[in-house]
Image (cartoon, rainbow, N blue to C red; front, side):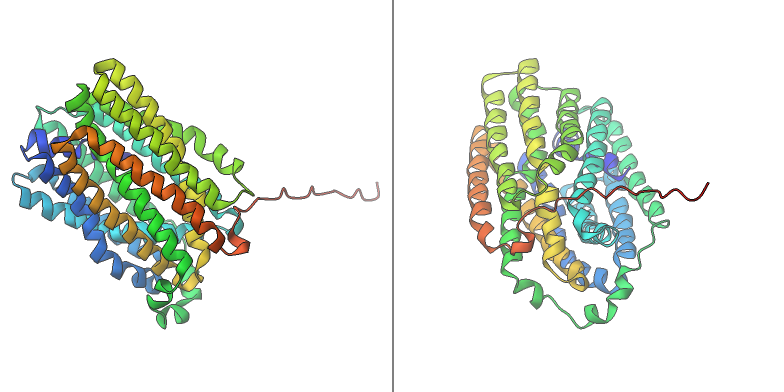
Length: 400
């Protein structure tokens, strides 16, 4: 439900700010980046709160803040209002991601966490894809009312998720309360493997995930695509993830994590170059077909992130510091999510066909970096766990 709401809004946020409210592309990109920037400050407080109070209450508070931020977006008339509301949403997101990731780790046995994070991505992307498809049918660049519907639906799904949390039971924070209370961020920052993973994730987000929000204006302005086609693009990307995520997660069990992870940015290089080609040489339906193929490739690459990267972050630190580990890890999303759209928005406005080759170059650096980090991964964590089938239960026949 929550991801469906995000999918309804996110593909069309820049279009709303630029085409409906009349903000420049550069300003619109900065508004999107502000959400990520808010995570940089609020995220520091989220980690200790998760470790002390528990993942569930922090997650609930973050959901309410996100509902307020997005639900009031139809009232935006000037840039400062958009910056304020997106900052509230971003602060809520700072609590959302580390608490949700920690909660999943608490509810899942270690040998199946890679599968749990893969399952998380399936449900998340299915919601985003369906939301993007429905949002494309509702959104119209000439109708502010259509975007009001999108923002209200998004806010409602945040609140619905908060209600679901009332039925989730999590005892893990109480088991480690004493240790968490005497710990701080220094232990996290001394972990060199974690810092390497953090740096890699920064590159993944800056040159990959964060630029996804700039595909819609590029597709609209350079390839003449409609809002319906843009919504369908996101749906194609998502349905590929839904179909491929669990088979890929099973296929890489027992494989080296970092080699599997390096495949993700390698596939993204192909994706961004095809997106650039579609906008440069094609338009309309032909451009849609090539971009859909490109974003399908992007989706296949995404399938490696949860089981290879996210699960490793959950494993490398002690359980009583897990909230802090995920909070610092979330800063890589926030910082890169600020840098990517902010710089990308201005590049898109000044030289739109230069953005995607530059992003491909950063992805190449990330792929090499993943391979260089592999020797530092602890031996017991170097490979993705392989679940052994349970032995059959034999029934012994009694007399008669």
